[in-house]
Image (cartoon, rainbow, N blue to C red):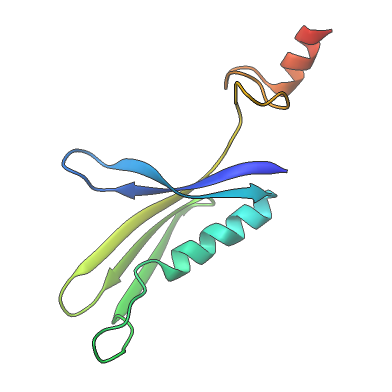
Length: 111
């Protein structure tokens, strides 16, 4: 079972920066399904009259990256979402310590 994060790019005072929106344990298919659920519900809110926002656009940039734009009468909300897999962890014996070392390389070193 792999560990994944869905990152959301946020616009702060400087350039865009990513924050962890959600962590997911599971297969790539499960992680992608969870990310698509996030993308499909981002910015979803009802107006005072209980109507959903007027327009929502989803752009696929790659298999693991989406841009979402939500418009209503008064403003717009935007977000970039990226699915990323954990590939290195210094505290997990099943993963290499660095991104440059594959699990196979690590097994050969231990022999």
